[in-house]
Image: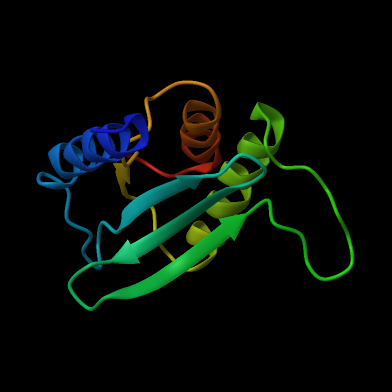
Length: 120
């Protein structure tokens, strides 16, 4: 099997291992993280209804080209997400790191969200 296919299967296995215990509800939505090479995205999702409650990312609005692939930008996204969630009355979340290890940008986002007032 080629290397990329093996890597995808391992990631899928890790993602299922993490997700089988986490379910987002109205009281405790799932905080999911997606990390690309240039940006990082985070959402609070209610899995029972299948809707996104709050979202934040480093992806800029039209026109600007800022880089969001570092720890500092990830911390800013975590802080922004926490402020938006607190504004909507959400204080608890279930952290879903997906297939990513809990270090670097993912860890910075989680710690900034905790500092901002989210509990998980």
